[in-house]
Image 1 (cartoon, helix red, strand yellow):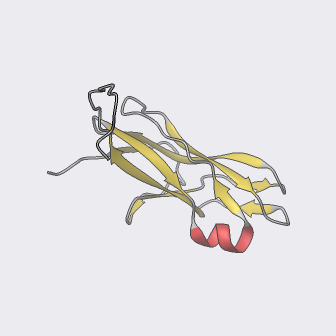
Image 2 (cartoon, rainbow, N blue to C red; image 1 turned 120 degrees about the vertical axis):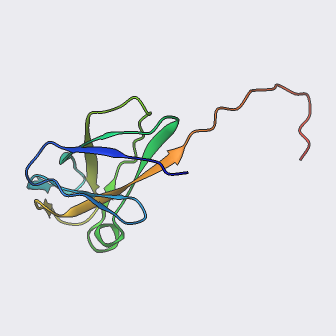
Length: 124
């Protein structure tokens, strides 16, 4: 089954690359102070396939070398606004985010909507 992800560029510096997830790149320069957070624009909007959600994953190099993590947020399949990433600086010095820098990966996963059954005992 082929799933189509519709992406709209809304900024001239927006980049689109898919490699084990949609790679997200900054469309703005920002400095994140130590123990601070900044909302970073990616310049893209997406139309999620039905019955899916998104999860953000940090860039390993940013975490290991600089203590920069992304706050994992998820959104339902009816969201079509710009994808923005909250980066948090847990490092020892301010961190400069540059236009075109990879800041996170976006993973799309299916949503399972089970029927709920309340029981007296579990079979495990």
